[in-house]
Length: 186
Image (cartoon, rainbow, N blue to C red; front, side):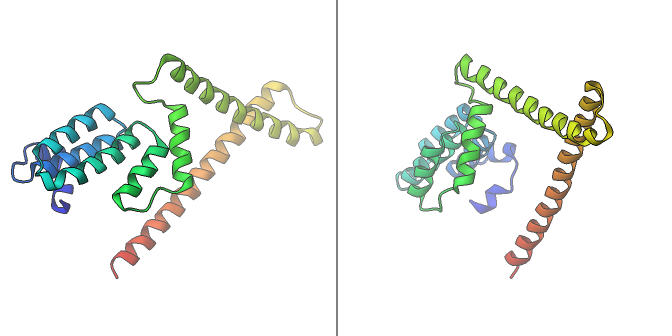
């Protein structure tokens, strides 16, 4: 199965010898893209192509992958534990819940989508308001500026903070990848 993971989707689709493993990998990739319908189809085909001894493991893998694709954090935790692996951390489960609120799965209703858009707009407005308040606080010793100038300064402050977070986050990410690469070669 590890040899199959490096292959492209087209190569996995045409695999004949290890058809069940190839379809399971395709299902896992679809669930990572949060495409629950495609993942379900691949796992159904994988289970039907598998030997009877392999079916239970594939079902458990499918449960975990579909819980991820459908953004169900509690089901994901239980399914991963049934697989015998370490469950996702609380932070990862929180982010999956948050993602379920902001970008609901395709089967969600219209109200869930409207709620997601409203939350995103509220977050953007809150960040912009914080930037404007910081700009206003900075301009108070100088006698205060007009609202338009505070708005411009607020946007500039928010852009600088987000740029700094992205820059230092990338550096931290590269450092972590380098440390992980060094420990995996030992």
